[in-house]
View (cartoon, rainbow, N blue to C red):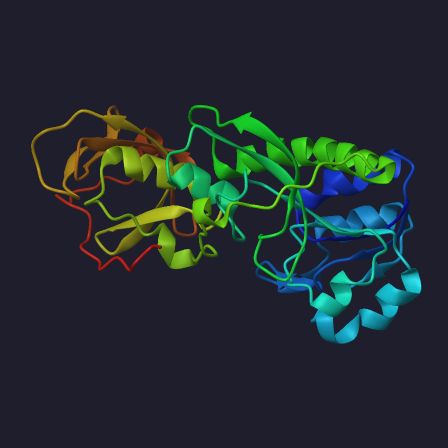
Length: 315
């Protein structure tokens, strides 16, 4: 089939490569514009663009696809458009262009976890399973008819970054099977049960500030769910410490945010609303990620508690 692929981050690369391996004619790739990155603010290509260029596929990078790319898409005359974490909403005019329609690869078991960050939110909410859905895109936010789904277990301790890599491969497999069935006219199509839907917002940097009034279990889920971005952090003596990894430990005494242990052997233990968080890996601002015990041997913490900073509504 003639396919136009729309995607931007690493998550979309396995799907694009799978379409090429399957023998589909990928006639164009649409991605977000190059963005400045790093201290030097140099423009950097997104992973999907890099993949497309390696396969000599024409790349389009509209700032707003609904305003700039209608004529380009019509000229490409796709049978199907495929979206995988593209990052822009498609207008009805664009959705009407492909002969069969637009297939979206969404990293949750719809109708649950609609929105732009379903992998992160599934971990933050303490889910033990998630999955991938292929759906026919409509004008709503992840509201189109479900085509195929595949359930995936969330592994103990798995971060959002790690789960994203696994789901990207599962998505590629499911997409290929979806297109096979669509081409054969055998693909099921099921309307979503909107009463069972849930929607979660985009991630923001300030969501990473730890609210030590939460239970240790909830904080651990946030550490995993917000890794690698935006990451979780706390302040001690005015210094920001990013928390990369932690575990829950039983602790009855103390109030939320109290530093129960801080030495080069036992590491860092902070009281939560219920039990405590043993910080295993951390990173000081401007420093390297390291074991908490190693950090404390060179940077003793004398404070009795984490700084009290008002935590904004995280959801």
